[in-house]
Amino acid sequence: MKFPHRRQFLHLAAGAAALPAASRVARAQAYPTRPISMVVPFPAGGPTDVIGRVLTERMRTSLGQPVIVENVAGAAGNLGVGRIARASPDGYTIVVGFVGTHVFNGAMYPLQYDVLKDFTPISLIANIPYVLVAKKGFPANDLKTLIAWLKANPNKASVATGGVGTPQHVSALLFQDITGTHFQFVPYRGAAPAMQDLVGGQVDVMFDSATNALPHVGADGIKAYATLTKSRLASALDIPTVDEAGLPGFYFSAWYALWAPKATPRSVISRLNSAVVQALADAKVRASLAGQGMEIYPPEQQTPEALGALQKAEIEKWWPIIKAANLKVE
Image 1: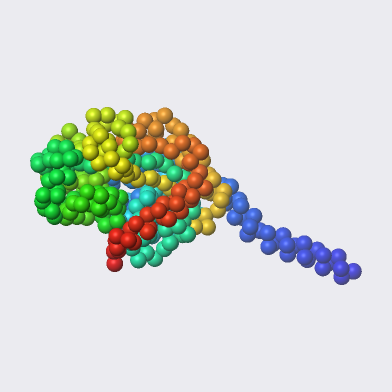
Image 2: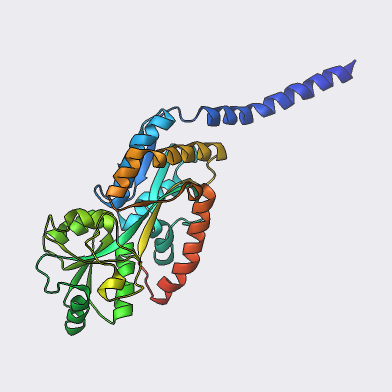
C-alpha cells in the first residue's frame, strides 16, 4: 500500500521541480512584456547614436514594446559597455557598440569585463567607411599636400579623436606609421563633440566615419581629402579615394552591432535578432542609414553567429597591432 503513495509523491516532486524551468520558458516566450533599454556608449549625435535611434524606431514595431535609447558616455565607450556586462541577462538591457568598444578597447584598457566572453551577440548592423577631413582654413587642399605639410611641420597639427583607442585614434596612428608623419592627438568624449570642434576650427584634422563627417563637408566649410575606401562612396562621389588621392591601400572602416549580456536566453536573442533583421530590411531604415554613409550587412551576415565570428577574427587581427604600438590606457 505504501508503494503507490511513494510513486505519487515522486511524481508531484518532479512536477514541482519543473515549475521554475517552465516559468522561465513562459517568460521567454512572452518576451518582451515591457520597454527595452538600448545603451549607446557615446554622446548623442555620433554614428553609434544615429544607428541606435534609427533601429529602435523600427524595432518597436516588431517587438510590440518601446526600445529606448540611453546615452551612457565616457572612457571611450567603456562605461556604457560595462553596464551591459553587469546587467541582468533578460533581454531588457542591450548595447549598440562597434569595433572600438568590442575589439580595440579590450587591448588597451584594464577592463572589468571581457569584450568577447561577457556578451551575447545579437546582430551585425552596418559598416561605416572612414574619411580624412580638415578644418576650413587648414593650409593643405589635397592629400599629397597634407602629407608633405605634416612632414615639414612635425607635431604642429592637432588631430581630434573620439577618445583614446577609438577608431578615429587607431586610424590616425596607422596613418602616422605609414606616412612617417607626427601630430598632436586631442581626445574627446565621443566623435560628435570632436567634430563640433573641427567645424569650429579648434582642431585641425580628423579621421572620422562618413556618417559623422559628410554632413559637415562643404556646408560647414570643412574639407575632405579622401575616403579610406577602395571605391568612391555613393553618398560622396566627388571625394576621391585614398588610392586616387595618393595613399594607396590605406583603407579603414568601422562595423557596428548589437549585444546582450552573456547568458541571455537563446529564445530572447532570436527575438531581438528577428527585430533587427526586419528593421534592416525596411526601405525607410535602409534609406536613412545609406544617407548617413553606412553600408548595411547582407541578411546572411546579420546572424549572432556571424557577429561572434567577426568579433573574434578582429580581435586576432588588431590586438597584436595595438599591443605592438604600446597603446595602453591606465
